[in-house]
Image (cartoon, rainbow, N blue to C red):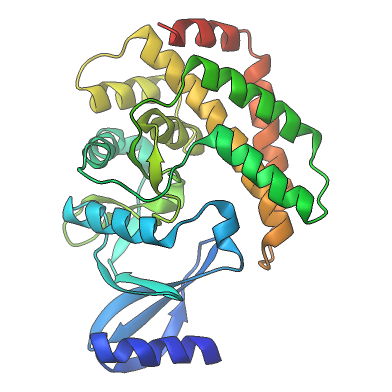
Length: 295
């Protein structure tokens, strides 16, 4: 707790005196999160894990994205930022059910994607796969067989859906990163550390696959995001971006298994996502999606 106490001491000058003891919060595979009370106000203090910059995380981009999202009313406000932590307002909340909140999430993402914001880092899965593999190999890791397939599949998807006109994106829409505030009852998105300039379609696919959306859910998502019924090309692009999301999650698990100090089954995490990718590619629909997405 020594380092945490030093951080809290530094924050007291800006946010007021500490009351009580920091309380560790559940969740978070990359960071350690604490609820703290400073100056009579509750905050969430997030401390990055070891070597998180190797995962493609840009802390300046995280701060800018969180600030922009807070201005749109879809994220807790940033209260302070130090080299060693990010502090946001604590929001009394409950877990959101993404499947019953699809339209609201779609509108939130559409608003963020349209923000006049240029983040200082990019997020594009085909590039990340190469970067993650190089770092893991340099540190003595043996890449699993699923990794090679993910790279090949990502290349095929990139050839069909190249990154044009990148927009600010969240890129990590896991269930735990979608909350509903108790006070106003609105959906909020948290954990912006993977934010970067990317493809808005990836956010939609990432949301869909990580929250087990079925085809009806996907139709609702695309319709709410576009403001009109989706085309076959848009439906196919969503399917492909679900696969690209699993490629990234699997590769992330491989690299985290090398660099992280957290007690977590990263190998199992990677395997589950590579297995789901393999199943999707084996589906006869995969080739149809590639053809349809070309429009």
